[in-house]
Length: 121
Length: 109
Image (cartoon, rainbow over all chains, first blue to last red; front, side, top):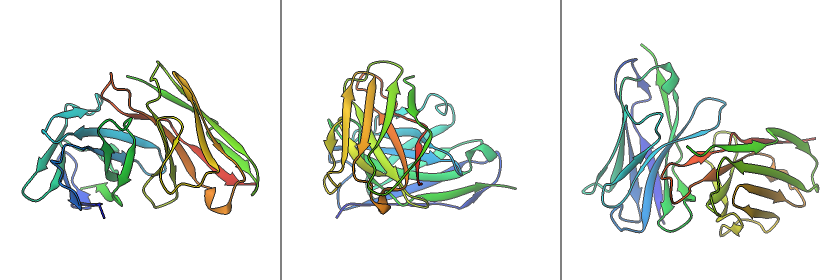
């Protein structure tokens, strides 16, 4: 079955770039049938959409993060990447990758288990 | 940006109760509205998509309704496993950004 698995350093220093990957198994990220999103959740808070990428590599970002975020795809390894630059303590959160079906009303039907990120020197 | 206002922010109910959570969009989003359930330490789980369509495998006591700007999630005959936090989410085709409501925490009374 299709699975998403986030990974990355659990600890990032302030002002550095946070880099996470999302390994996708069971379906090709270039199949054309899906969008792939990153979402984060600050401790004890709600969900914040970061951005998404489609099978052609086209991206959309949350306007509040657009200047610092980049989402890309590695088709050879069938994985997605998230880079968030100039991090501060406010970027400490659980980061999720998730899938939505093209033409599926934007519903995120499959999620990874999440990757905890702490920002500290 | 489209803002989603969810209410109430929290509510208490008993097993067997029927509860309703509402979500209002700052502009019309047709039926591009989804509902999620999240339990502590877990990723969100899709319950409802297209405002009223039940995701495969989700119990029929969950139902959604609405269109345009006003939406509701109803849970009938609450079960112990339903006590969780619920989020609405919009994804209008004309506005590529996705936004979530602030969440509703459902506790046992």
